[in-house]
Length: 205
Image (cartoon, rainbow, N blue to C red):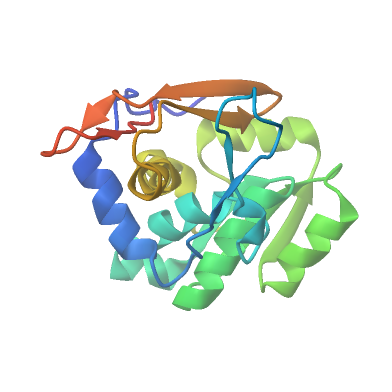
């Protein structure tokens, strides 16, 4: 039977700022680089999240979720389901925090990413896609025997939203963020949330 998940809710600006403080020693504040297309094109900047230690932005959410574990959860360790970047993010953050980590790896995952997760110290549990999907729905996997970071998805979301908040801080007047997400784009208007000075920030929904 599938687990009953918490209702989806907007992530508050306060949560994003708290997440930024928690992950500051784990992630790299990546630069914004202008995309030079010529004088008749809009001002477009690229956020180079490929410069993170795992070459992907998913370290942000993983680092925040690991940082919010209780002492008992840290002792038990954490597990997640991944075919690559998310598993690397959790493995990296867990290793840095001294927390045991298991990754339920889909059998079709790229060999290079599986090897990176292994090198980061994760215990790898290869499973068929259907088994991985069931574990994701149930938020439990007996062989992992530790805390599923999926239960704290909001914690991960706040961590992932930090990069949108830093874009607004580094580039005043930004109007829209375009975020690549599983083969389609998300658009984040700059007036979703505002700080006390009235500047636009971003609230990941």
